Length: 304
Image (cartoon, rainbow, N blue to C red; front, top):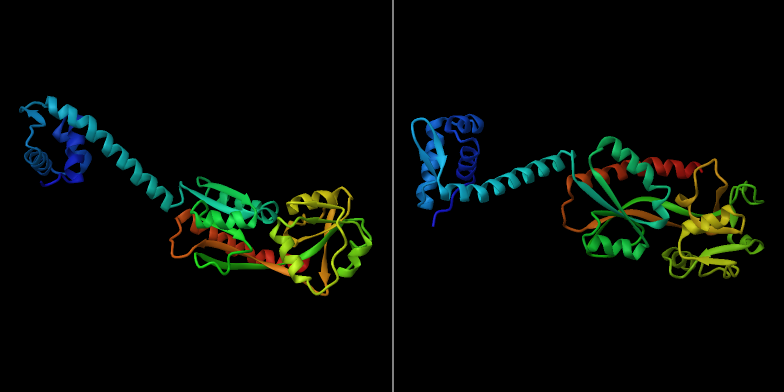
């Protein structure tokens, strides 16, 4: 059986809605003979008379009215879908879901979202903030379009695009004896109360692996799951903490970050996306902004 074309169905729906071949032809930018041929072809394919025509009027038949109720809704939904897709392609609508590790979500991501919203105010930005393993999983499951993370480099399902090398620093109160030092050696931490992230954090694993050849750090006064909580402890004068530099608030602030040396260690923050998958226009635009912003962030990190 030959199936009606979308053009034939749109012609029928327009004539039925307007009740006029002349009005429908004008709306569809067709000549009246061309429109009449489409309706005749449709009736012939369906083997049903859809309109009763006279020289003065055109009216839907009983079956034509029933068919219009179904086809009119389908054509309207298709038009809305096409417009929605076009708006998303032109960044006039749509959404982007960004996964982000907790330690980069608080200070690094908000300025980027602000810039993105200034350029594309009608695009919704969703943020999935979580630990490194969960952020990686969100990309692999397709829940996040892209993500900011520091693990996933070896995963064959992931395209890992390095953004910046972020050092670990010592977070301490601005009035702390170490706050004005150019750098602090790891061995010096034994003289001060130390707060740390627990073994549930990937940051703890990175630090412990990097310091495997050194004497162990002092027993912490407090362990937490998230780096952002460490910053709160330092702000309240409970101790010092080792944190990624991006988590330290920008000056002026009650907490400063002092470079750690002998050895200097860091992590690579990267954009994650699923290998072999195309990004939506909003996701591609956000990824482009991330890449641009990382250059300025690298300069800022060197100055701190």
